[in-house]
Length: 293
Image (cartoon, rainbow, N blue to C red; front, side, top):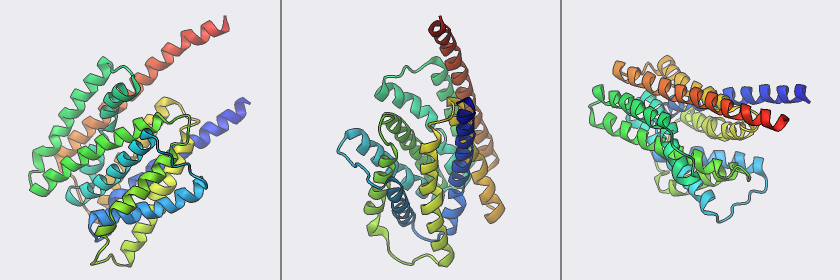
């Protein structure tokens, strides 16, 4: 029994690594596609919906507020993220989106009734201080608003995470399917020329099938067999890998202050995850001992 659980955990960790790696290709691939960002988001989601729909087979798209709320938040997230990548650097877009755990603490309190601790508030202060550094150098109008949109994508992404967690007894991937369908439908008016070249269409196909399609299937499966700390820390490979791919293939470099701000954001969010996990483990130990007695 223990050997089976250990094997499943190893598979889950590998799935999380694969998920983060697939997510990290978004910045580079979005830059490759020479098309308006709303069209990119729509086509990518349409392809992802086909894959996830085939995986789910018989989705139950009910009329619950939670499912529709998660789906709408997901659609907003993927649209805003693509727009942000077109208006600011990929490093800024992904690092600012990864302020999501901070907003997640607030949404968890409001929606799930989970208590927001002093650690949450301290993390919020530190993360917002790091975010401020992104605007120290990025004063051009496009980059400034790109940073704002990236922050908003982080807010909506946090809402996605909380609403998916609220569906833990159901099948959260159905909300992702619905979110991709919504994205595909609302962006139809923007599917106009000039259209991408062959490389652009190849990038769109990869993003739809793998970068958000397969990755979310992996993510949903992995969360069943990993610890809380692994679920928080392993996906943080994404904001580390994302700007590296873009730098290697396009030469785009984030500003030095943005790198400092990004480091502060990542350290703060990671530290919060570690401390929270340690505290949770300590709370469970007395309960386990009591059960044995």
